[in-house]
Image 1 (cartoon, rainbow, N blue to C red):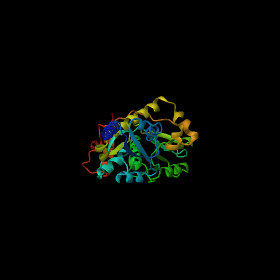
Image 2: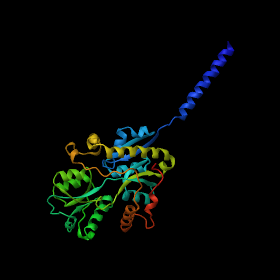
Image 3: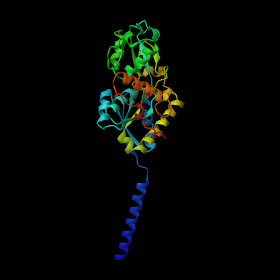
Image 4: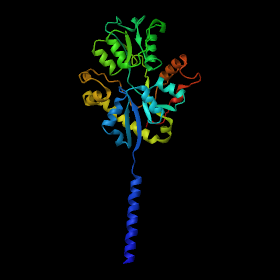
Length: 311
């Protein structure tokens, strides 16, 4: 009897060991925390999350939404995020200041220079002596300077009052307190729907200014999770290229911030599968930052790119 009990116990132990071994061999999900703000750059991530593409690829992604870039950057710098959608100017400034942040891919949303319907501006050549509101030393400031340069003007030819909050800039544009401002969507579409006009966009200048960046710690510790992240991201991009915009109505209104009545007016960016930032875009940013002493003189912007995370 004792012998039979011993055999049973040993057999059961072998069974449990086999079960546990089987569990260890399964693909286990890794976790990533990504910071975002409402934008068209966020749309692919929102689709991937909504459709379960991250989970399908074995990575659990927590998307934390911010309404202030300062709050987003603080969360990143305190290691409460693994990565974020960020403009190259901000990422370079943080990296130069000692934050170990690196871009793994570019994003495709654009910024448009929107002029007020009562501003008298019809083309970028009409910007001389006009008030173009900016957020100083940010991507908005950078894009504005590119537009002014494209118009053949010097920065002394325009006035650039500092208005940091995008909703306030839009409200001032409505009330003719400023003549123009560089806006992302959904604010650009809202402004155009009210009769204001776009005179140039970063797409027309063939410049991309935003990307997805991760902390070096995350890159070192979770490279496979990041590759899974990008597989899910690319699946969302495929949806955006092949499915009608009506499929994304809820996400566009509830996540990105478009008014429901403007969904039919939305022009989606030309989204690409994940790809590295373009060197030409980065060098433009580096030149602009150094001219304003916003980064160290020996800063090399190409060092903030990580090139082996896109599968």
